[in-house]
Amino acid sequence: MILLGVNIDHCATVRQARYRDAATQAGGAIEPDPVTLAVLAERAGADGITVHLREDRRHIQERDVWRLRETIATRLNLEMACTPAMTALALKLKPDSVCLVPENRAEVTTEGGLDVAGQRARVAAVVDAMNAAGIVTSLFIDPDAPQLETAAAVGAPWVELHTGAYANAYFTPHRATELARLRTGCDRGQALGLVVNAGHGINYVNIAEVRTLPHLHELNIGHSIVSRALFTGIEEAVREMKARMNA
Ligand SMILES: CC(=O)[C@@H](O)[C@H](O)COP(=O)(O)O
Ligand SMILES: NCC(=O)COP(=O)(O)O
Image (cartoon, rainbow, N blue to C red; front, side, top):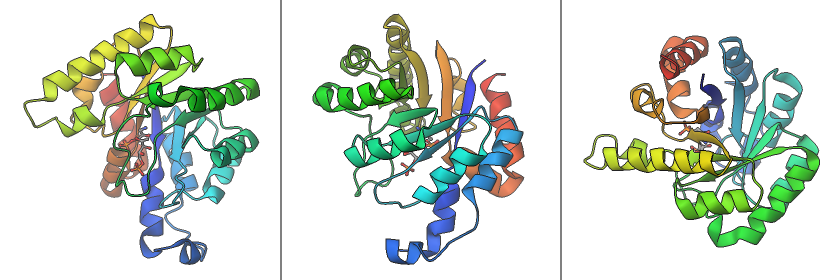
């Protein structure tokens, strides 16, 4: 069975919608509360909760991650940039796992995978710190051989394959090529002894193909689940995705 990590970032996007900068953000936007959403998602069968604490705090705030740590019953997966500040925060927070992701303030969303091969020493230092603290590290990478091989070489136990290129290509002639690229990545990750997760842009339509990828441990899905929850409620949105993942 493939596990489901529910990313609740975009509940916080709605909450922050009226706050343009850190000064007003601190003014106490309180609803919709991401922690409440996380608890309801768990009640509906979420196997874990994922949040991306971005440096620009466009959605999830630091106070959210501390409240999640105290409240949720499943697993807390903290997505973070490879920075000293985020490493220090994670070592204090002690999430069940961290997922190292690329970040830049100009991006609309996470546009590509972390270039592990191009910054091996920087990534290895964070992985070593997390390994020493007993925190599982996942690397959010494109499904390509140099990234997968470097992920294994730096001692990361998990990878999360970026499914965004496939999701964006779904209605184009490139869809089959991107799915094949992911399939090859899953096989290579398994062969390298890595736990293989996947995420970004997975929805209630493309899940029918994503679920056929081999060796999948967990899918991290957020935007489509939160979007559907606006109409059906989070519990039904989570139940429906779990049913489709494992149909
Ligand atoms: C790393 C990843 O794919 C998700 O966490 C994604 O970043 C969702 O958050 P954003 O929409 O802010 O990128
Ligand atoms: N790492 C992917 C994730 O957590 C959720 O991405 P999305 O479903 O919001 O695109």
